Amino acid sequence: MFSRLSKQQRNQNPRAKAQKNLRRLKVEYLEDRVVPAGSVTVAVTGGGGLTVTGDSGNNQIQIAETATPGSYIITGQTNGAGTTIVAGTGVTVNNTNPNNVTGTITGITSMVVNMGAGNDVVNFVGNTAANTTLTGNLLVTNSGGLQVRFDAANGNNGFNVQGTTEITHTGTSSPLVVNVGNGGNTSTQTALVGGLIITGGTENQNVTIRGRSTLGFFSDNVTGGNDTVRITNATIDDFFSYVSTGTGNDNVLIGTAGGAATNIGGNVAIDTGTAGNEVISIGTNGPVTIGGTAIITGAGSGTQNITTGTGAGNNQTVIVAGGLSINEDTTTGVNTINLRNLGATFLSVLTGTNNDNVQLLTDRITDQVAIFLGLGNDVLGINNSLFTGTFLPPASTLLGVVDIEGQGGNDAFNIGTTNNAGFTTKFSGSFFLSGGVGNDTLNIGTASAQVVQFSNIASFYASDYPSTTGETDVLGAKGANVAFFGPHAGTGNWAGVSAF
Image (cartoon, rainbow, N blue to C red; front, top):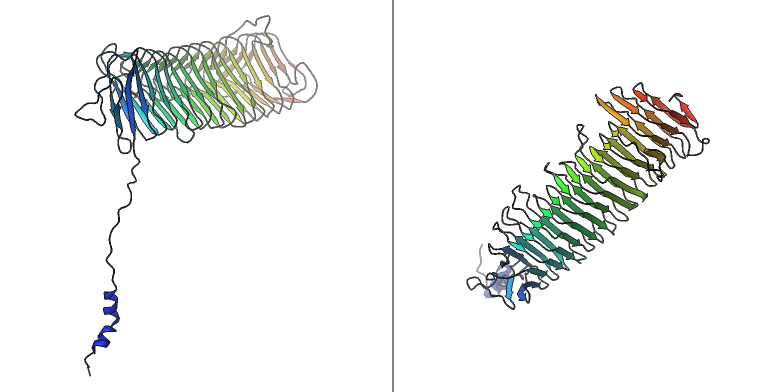
């Protein structure tokens, strides 16, 4: 039944043939994918200058104060494969760790840190010893991605600069991140006494100033990207300026976290650029005091969302000693403006051509008020607020101490229409309202628990002042809690409730 296979037949066995043709496999290693770091050269120049110059690698360094004023140690840290410190003029490298630690560098009064074109990190770490302050200027530049952190790695110890601190980022493909302060509440926080200037590129920018840090002033100029600036639990002795010339979506947040106080001694200027959807929040989670005038400006087709305060209670948690001006009259997007818990000397609001919403709640304004709505179908609400100004300068172009005018569209004016028991909306000086072009609606004093009081002349124009003819506006409702203590009249074609 079984027969012995011949040699030729055995050689034709498929399994044996396959085994004969097997090839030995081997593993080949792929190239290392770790992003390489580079090196930075540290040198001392004449007059106490310290220069740090990076290459195109991804470098990370720490510049740490010592207990001796004007003395610093620079360490190369891990960012990818680690950063190597190269000793330049007047600098030695620690023999125990020759790749990444300098010896103590003394006699330094100013610094220029040019990190190059990589994605770089610079950590400035303070020392609790007295007088550990860089007496001159600090300049940090980069053309790639850049993170600059003060107090990032050493608890609450503040890094202090007496001169001007300037951070310049010209990158077009990687972001800029700046952190000043670590959120602690001790007294040894960062002090940039000579002020902070930030110049950003076209990429995204994220700037945070917190932890009881102190700045002489703050100036931020960006040319594009989606940018965010956060100021909380900090003090800026002089002015605050944020100017965007780009088209990104920007956020300016002052006193919006932690509940701690934020103080700005001088003027505030915020310009959010020509396009993009913008958010500006002031004092929504912590009191904010501004010693000068605050001016907020926007333009373009994006939405503008501006908020002050929390809307809770009867206290003014956002104080603007020099008055608040909001100029959105060149915008074509939708403006939402919620001014709550605001205390200011004067208030000026100009809106754009879209359908805007302006709400005043629990505010205290001690001088003139001008609210000019744009060409859209706008809504204005005023509730639980006191307007105590009584004087209108002879040269003023306003038609009342409180001057409210609709420019066009079908607008709605709601005064004293929300129920908050025990609250009063009061106009101590002359009051003027013009509906403007369009079929407008006025509701006044409809809240049963809120009194609306006019202590001086009150004029209500249905049409576009000074015209007394044209469209028909509607006095939608006039509540029983409206009190007039001076001459008052409704002029033009008011339909509905006829008596003012």
